[in-house]
Amino acid sequence: MIRFENASVVYPGGVHALKNVTLAIPDGEMMVIVGLSGAGKSTLIRAINGLVPLSDGDVTIDGASVRHAKPRQLREIRSKIGMIFQTFNLVKRTSVLNNVLLGRLHDAGTLRSLLGMYRAEDVEIAMRALERVGIVEKAYVRASNLSGGQQQRVGIARALAQEPKIILADEPVASLDPPTSHVVMRDLQRINRDLGITTIVNLHFLDLAKVYGERIIGMREGELVYDGTGAQADEHVFRDIYGRSLTADDLLGEPAPVPA
Amino acid sequence: MTAASEAGAGARPEKPPRSFAALAGLAAFAVITWFALSEDFGIGLDIGELIENATRGVDIWAEFMRPNWGFVPQTVDPMIETFQMAVIAAVVGCAVALPVSFLASRVTSPNLAAYLADRGVLSVVRAIPDILYALIFVAAVGIGPLAGMLALLFFNIGVVAKLLSETIDGVDTGPIEATRAAGGTGLQTSRWAVLPQVMPNYVAYSLYTFELNIRASTVIGIVGAGGIGQLLNTQRAFFRYDNLAVIIIELFVFVFVIELFSIWLRRRLV
Image (cartoon, rainbow over all chains, first blue to last red; front, side, top):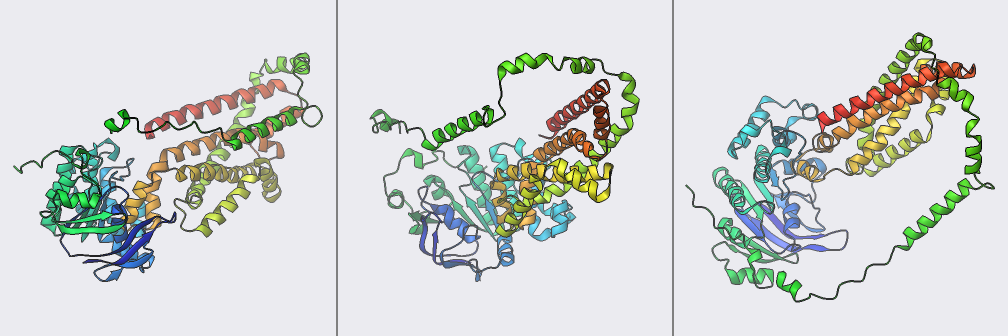
C-alpha cells in the first residue's frame, strides 16, 4: 500500500509542483495518472521512490516513510520499486543484459557488482525478465542497436529484474509510435495482472488511459482533481482535468488491437 | 497549431541586442593582445625585423638538414628508457586519475566536501609544471629515469583528471536516474551508468598523455630526469645539431605512430 499524506513538493526555483496530495494506492492496482504537461504527474511518481524529495507531508510504502528514510533505507525502498522512463534511460554503450542487471545491483554486493561478476541466479533472473518481454535473443546486443520499442522493453525488463512490488512508469510510450505504444502498454498490463505488481503509469493520451487504467487519477497544477475508474472517465471528466476542450492531440488515435 | 500560425499569433519579437559582456570581453581581449605584442610593454614583435633576421639561423638549419645517421645506435637505449618511463607513468597515472576524476565531477562526487577537496588538490597538481616536478624528484631520488617517471606520473594525473572530470560533467543523466531508482549506490551508479559513457574518452585521453610523455621527456631530461632528453641536452650543449636532428626525427616518428594507434583504437571502441 502506497499512501500520500498531505504531500507537497516545492522545487528550488519556487515552483509548487505537488500541493497537499492525499492518496492511497492499494497493492496490485493498475493506476493511470493523466494531466497536462507541468501538472505534476512526474513529480507525483518520483515522490514515491524519493527521486524528488518532499517539502511537506509524507509518502509511505507499507508504512515505511520515504521522506524520513536514511540513504540505506531509501535504497532498500527503491529496490522494491521498478521504474520505467519516457526516454528509456538505458546505458546505450553496453549490452542489453548489463542494462537489465542494473535491476540486480541492490542485491549483488558492492564488489561483485563493481567487477560485473554477477551471481548465476542474478543472471538467471535478468534472463527471465528479458524472456517475459520477449527479447531475450538480444541479451548480448548493445543497447544502442535496438529500436525504440525494443529499448523500452529492455527498460521494463530492468524494472522486472528487481522483482519489485511496485512499478512506476513515467510516460512510457511518449517516445513510441502508436502500434508499439499498445504493445508496451499491454506488457505492463500483463505484468500487473500476472505478477500482481502495483503499476502506476503517467500518460497524456486519454484513450490509452481509458483502455488500460483500472483507476484514473487526474492532476492539474499540482493538485489531485479526479479519482475514479477508467470506465467512469468520460469526455467531461477529461475536460475538467485539462481545464479546456479536448483536441485530436490528446488522443493516440489508434484503437487497441484485439488480442489474438 | 496550423490555424493559429495562419491567423498571425502575434508580432514577431525584436532581435535581442548583442550582449554587452561579450563586446567588453572582445575589447579586453584585443587590448591584452596589443599589450603583449607592443614594444614598450610586451615582447616587441616586429614583422620587418623577423623577415630581416630570418637568414641568421641558416647555418644551424643547414646542419639540421644533414642528420648524422651514424648517431642512431647511441639513441636506442635512451629512447627505450623514455618509452619505459612514458608507459609506466601513463598506466599508473591514468589508473590513479580515474577515481580522482569521479570525485572531481558534481555528477558523481558523493558530497560537496569531497568534490571541493579533490578539485583543490587537482588544481595544485596541475599548476606545477612538469619541469618543476622533474627538479623536485631529481632532488628527492637522484638523477635518472625514476625521477623522470615520477614527474610524468603527476603530470599525467593532472591532465587526465581535468579532461575526464569535465567529460563526466556532460554525460547523459538518464541512466544515472535509472540506476538510483533501482536502489543502486553511488559507486554502482558511477561504475554502470557513467563509466561506460566516458570509456572511449578515457582511452583517448590515456593515449594522449602517453604521447605527451614522449614529448615532455625531452624537456625534463634537461634537468637530469633520464631518457632521451638527457642525451638531447648533452648534444645541444656541444652544438651537435646533426645529432639533434636524428633525435627529433625519431621523436616525430614515435609520436606519429602513437597517433595512428590511437585513431585505430578509438575507431574500434566508439
